Image (cartoon, rainbow, N blue to C red; front, side):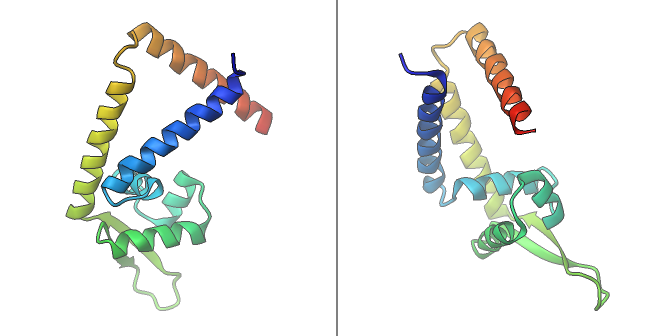
Length: 142
């Protein structure tokens, strides 16, 4: 039997592979899908998105620009003072909302299929154990 952390690596690889396949169908990347969700959830400035995603500003800026190019996000400049630092407000477009809704529906379908043979007790136990493991990792990182 494989060690727990080795199994977690395998699960992570499988999960990421499946997500890549799903997002590709919707002409998105995993990062773009997550950013669209964050903007829809009200994190609509670069400052808020940096805090939420923990991405560096240049990476985030590049990803946001791609979403604007794909017409999945729109951008609006905030503030009118010439000396003020540029601040932009990002909003999800109708096309972006459609892509996000379709991707989220596919994700829910995959999740249901994945756990269709699991009891509620088993699903809850997995959540408890994964949360406990995550807490342990956070403790080690500190």
